[in-house]
Image (cartoon, rainbow, N blue to C red; front, side):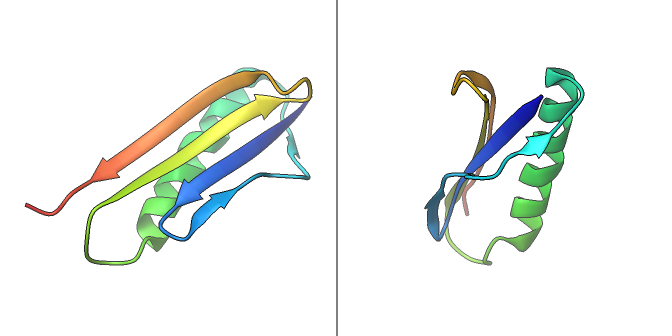
Length: 73
């Protein structure tokens, strides 16, 4: 099944128009967690940020949403 990975980071929101084939919803969630970790590594230094990845299926139904919030103290 094809899943779409929409993201929000410090540069804005992006809707995935292509998607990725994953064998199961669990595999799509695993891929989303890995992508969120990569987004954190690639995030600009300094300041507060919230990173979001939202996975939807071909029907547009939400499957998973992951958020990573970090703030300077």
